[in-house]
Length: 440
Ligand code: XUL
Ligand code: CO
Image (cartoon, rainbow, N blue to C red; front, top):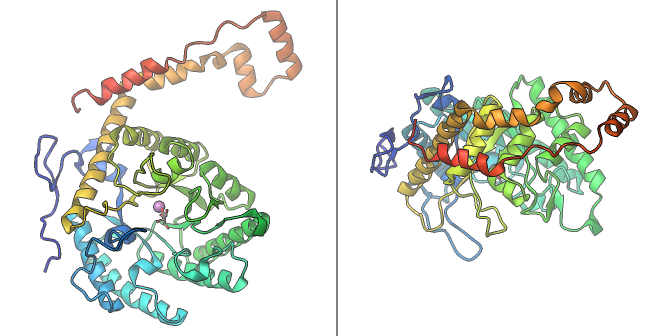
């Protein structure tokens, strides 16, 4: 029997007034040679969608995420969540999910007992994977919530805590592999500091890298061929987190020789917390060959924390999809690391959130493709640097030049002619023209 009294969500087109229909996400529609569903491998986050019930610092849960089970019975609740999750994904046409170990079944007892509880629910989930073809996009270990991780996991001052983190990572890799996962995430939750007075930053970063290296070695030996990801975030819960942003994470991966196995999972809300745009973080990842996966959400720029809202900003999504399409797509996917607002507290709202997010990214894709096909933006960017195609410019690009030669050239030329206009206003108006033109 169904848990959600809602039919499967279908594409009905931009004119539809049906709340429970896609207006723009048309899975089979071909855009730039690929189906929308291929450009946009959407995933459900187990934690927000099946777990988050609206609790905040000022008040209790507003939503019921028991899915008909008794929450005090961990195994029964875990099964009810899996039932709800697979029905939800099937009805929305989602082919992937993302999870932390302890999203699957509440933490309990000793490590051996917890692992046994995880094995039991994993058997149940594997049956569902077999029947539906829905798989994990990525898995991860929650190394932040339990008090033992209050000083971090890899960065903890305690080797016993480090060992426990390693055990949880090992189990989470096993689960990810059983669920056919494409990737494994390290989000550095409490890998950071509150004060440098008590922190050996170098020591902590070396240990985080060791934990990652051990995870890679274990997973590769077991035959895992997917990507590892770092998911950058600058702060919250810690004052400063080591994986601050894409550039910092890339530097870290290269410093410790992890760049062959890792890419980045870029989260929109984390980008803005770091003082960047979502697009900036995608571009930095892409030009370094490290754009792996996306946590699709949006923050509130008036608030200084991670609000994890469903993405609604089409302009933002167009810019993101422009970067993704230019990078040739993702090897990972688009995980809705997003939760409905506290007052959107019904099961129907869970569907409304995903319809909003999927339609927003579908619009982003349609309009990004239109910008690329229009060609004016790309032509302009190319022409901006065309002085480097020949003469002194070509020599600079090839590296076949010295500082003395450049100085001689500058002396012979006199004052350089004024640089070409950057034409920002025109480019922005081209984007608006395409954005608000009828849908192709
Ligand atoms: C926290 C966050 C996590 C990661 C997975 O800010 O984004 O949910 O995506 O640990
Ligand atoms: Co995230």
